[in-house]
Length: 67
Image: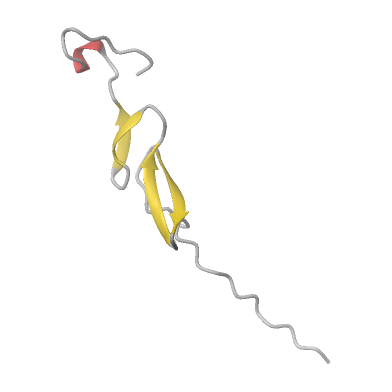
């Protein structure tokens, strides 16, 4: 009779994700590395946000386009 051995799963550094909101995790050298999604800024480990939402979020000589 052959015994079934439990399948050993390698730990995945991105599950669960160490990243904040609007950020993605990529495995890099065996560790999870977070980066903000395109068009988002901030600390990817805490959470990323659009650069602006309203024109008043910008300097007076700039306008908010696509967030």
